[in-house]
Image 1 (spheres, rainbow over the protein chains, first blue to last red):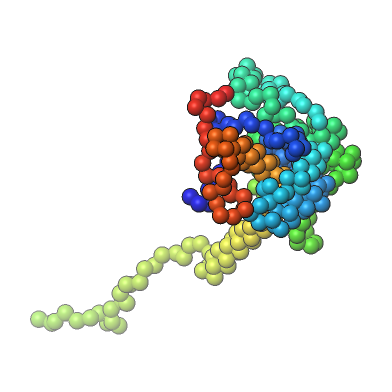
Image 2 (tube, rainbow over the protein chains, first blue to last red):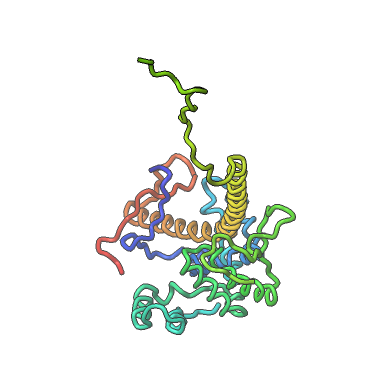
Length: 198
Length: 119
């Protein structure tokens, strides 16, 4: 129990008091897990100095980092937001209807119910600006495939190419064994349910 | 009366061994075949494990890249609640007093809930 994280975000535990005015406000990233996972390596590529700064601050202020590292934390969030400011509504239902599958009416209804407006604003500015279609396809695929990256390589390659062409951010997995194709570039994904193609 | 005697030249040998045709491959060939199948299987398993390791590495690093972002957001939220708590305490008691004999930030275990459910 002592290791339990106190994360108070249940409906009954809402405290709406804002931060004091002397602490600068920052808009939160506001993206759900799939867009974040999809953009994580680009966030890592661009924001490494800020991320390292923040983590160093947290290490140097054990037990007080939450208060001491607010400034570094704001920088981290601002940087991550800069990667990918377009607010878009969830438009997956239309794509689904085109693709077939379950009835479009049923789909549209369920999505409208589940996803509120703010939940699907994928606020990752630059990615949204240049590669919105690819980005959305990739994280929708991740959402539909239990967030397993190996199921969505085709979409990922398109996204990576677009991001590299426009933003010069590259996905690099550190510590990959030398002389091997990095896992995200392999054409053959053993564990994929479907052939992702070349 | 002459007694029964064995026939001239003795009895024929009694056939007590089974006399079935030997079906299938020779044992040595079978053994080699099984060994071959096993080797192929283990080779594939090994490849699969290597691939899983790489997939795990990818997942881990994607998380590592996100951790500062998520931690920063959570910390801001915790500090916001902490400061609001202190302000509330000051308003109610006239002074903010920490129950802890240290200046460390302690993650709150309990939270004040509003009397009615908010939307």
